[in-house]
Image (cartoon, rainbow, N blue to C red):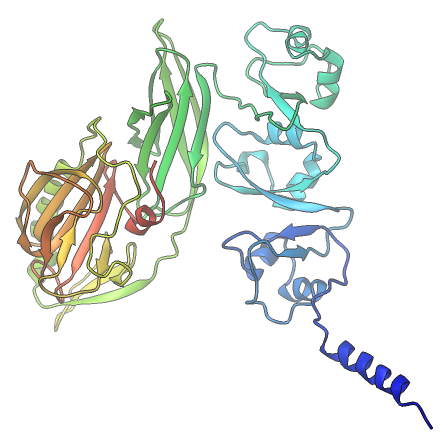
Amino acid sequence: MHNPLPRLLILLCVCFALISPVSAQTADGPIYIVQPGDSLYSIAARFNISIDALMAANNLTDPDLLAAGQRLIIPGLEGVTGILNSEIINFGDSFRSLVRRTGVPVDLLRRLNHLVSPTEFYVGASMIIPQDAEAPPMAGIVPTAGESLFELAIRQGSDAWTLKELNDLGGTWDGLPGDVLYTPGDESSQPATGLPPAFISAEIKGLPLKQGGTGVIFVKTAPDVNLSGALIDIPLHFFNLEDGTNVALQGVHALLQPGAYPLRLDAALPDGSSQSYEQMMLVVSGNYRSEVIPLNDPATIDPAVTEPELQLIQSLISQSPSDRYWSTIFAAPAAYPDCYTSRFGTRRTYKVTNTQIQIPGFHTGLDFCGGEGLAITAPAPGRVIFAQPLTVRGNATIIDHGWGVYSGFWHQSEFRVQVGDIVEQGQLIGLVGGTGRVTGAHLHWEIWVNGVQVDPLDWLAAAYP
């Protein structure tokens, strides 16, 4: 009798081949690990390749099916192998120190990151760095004033010729004070920075900064240094953490055009001298939407009404008291914490019904769902500094959370606190209403950080500082 088993095995193998996934990568090239927020389109643009080429190299059929941590072959990068890491440039980093620390040739770094000049090396920029699995860890060192390369080598337990070769110096005489050099270290080695000696370290949290975002700047200094600085043209206010680190919180205006802007740190030393360091910082788009808001009363967008009210608010939130009331993440102040009718940063056009009057602006806070009489609670501890009616904002309450951070609650039907009250997180402070410039009853909540309105959703998603 004929045995059907071989034919059955053949059919099973054919079927298995037909239904097996087509996820195997068939092209050669370096590997990029997908980062949160990446899309196939942004990755293709970053490496200057087409979507079709990227999909073909990775056997992808749907450009929208992409997950953080996924490994993608990047075609068209001849001579490049291994893993392509992403590294965010922080304050004090330089193009030259990056080249020395990673050992990646200058031409390759420029090619991978489309750099025309090292001056495009901005704080907050994401750089593609090929990872060399065999490269030893590197420890950063900075020569002090008057210190020779020989003396520096002795201090590091190395020799001047090794430092010369590792850092591509012209000779053993070529080390400069403040120039970041590298020497073999261990896994615990921390990268050095080119900051002046008054600054031990400086770091910005949450890079890159976005329109409407909150910048958090951590700085450690030498003893008895008086620290100040500015982001663009706004003076920074520093406060002390328990470990001695100085921290400044600074809002980025929602209408600030994306681009590179200066961040400067200034140190006043006990002997009367001063040291400063400035670097360009990248601000990216907040990707805000647009909407048209119909209004019946033109008085609510009349500058004669709106400007004095805005100046009053700004005068109230312009202080930076040293007391900090909050210590944990903020909580939503609304009865429906995850339901929003309008988000922060939305570009708005206020249009008066049956007229040609149109005023551009943006939404300065977060609007929550819910109607008249719902509870409004404090998102974090603080002190009430304002509670009274206004024309545009209606019944308005402002809470000072300390360190230049303020919350505003507009359009209330009733106040449940008064000026001077100290409130705790979750405490009732008012009721939702429809007072002021509104199209219906709702809670509008906004946060000011050192004089600038920021996205409240950021403060609900992460703890600051």
